Image (cartoon, rainbow, N blue to C red; front, side, top):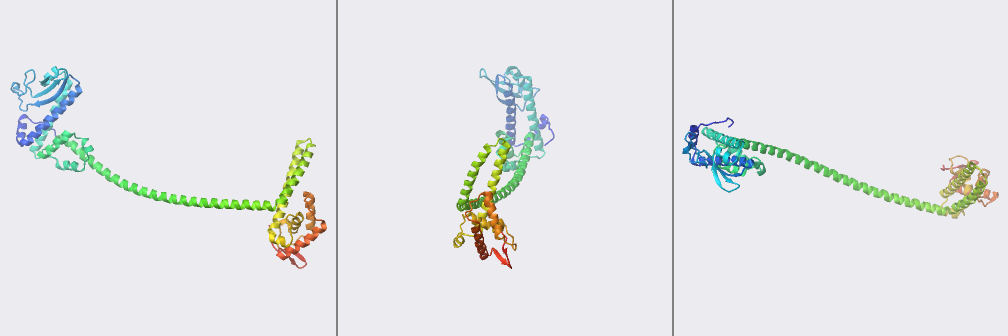
Length: 415
């Protein structure tokens, strides 16, 4: 149905005779509907003083005897096409031929040409239907059934109005070929539905892939959440351990402070006393640089004193617990005691098999420290020697030092 067909009046009558009365009725109703649709569209766009109502056609119109036409223009002339119009001003209804339509209804030549051109196209289209029906073509049932089964309403409405669908159904019932333009619309609709079905299949596969992707993402999310919970649990545990460790550390520091209270207080007292002396000396010096050096020297001395005291006291705690101290009547708050021990054990650093510092060395070390740092050592030199002998005996019994021939050596490494 691609070839343009132009039937003569005689051919048209022959082909019409091949149709049943029901088929001719269907075809005429469709032709009238298409005519009225074309004219109504052009009238609506013209903006004139007349409103189109309907058009009638004299299919037996003879151009050589127009006076015999059953359709008469309001001027009395016989016509093939009669356009019934209603005045927008008076409401009067009149029938016009195409020429009178231009004069009375005020419709422009261009609009009338469009109307006649549209009618010509409709006539040519219907000639095609007659031509192809005579050659055995019938209604395109396969395409029609396909769209009925698979097309959505919105897809059909894109190509066919409700009235068009009504005539499609009528043509299907009468098994008539359809108007060429409608055939192309139907063909395009089938293509669209097929494309949509292919697209739906593609989208279905995409949805399946998307579903799998989401399942993977959900699984990964759950694994991340699990790791996050485990990490949070681990973090909480680490924080708990850190707090516990900090608490233990603080408790240890508190305990050490309690243990070292005597030494801390003594150090503070010493620093306070010497700080006052320092400021007094500084006030007697004009040079700011010398004042700065004086204060720096004092700070260094105070830090060294504090460090020696700390190391000596910790060494005592390392070797003697509270029970052992009580058993041997050892006072941890005795400067003389901890310093002699510090001297015996090489200032807290020993190497196995090396000789232990003799009494003169250890006691001499204590004497020098006491003088340098003004430690409040209450023992006399003789008492310090006695303290040396006592501590050596205890250390021998504890295995910290041992006799090797005529020497006494360190039995362990101390750091």
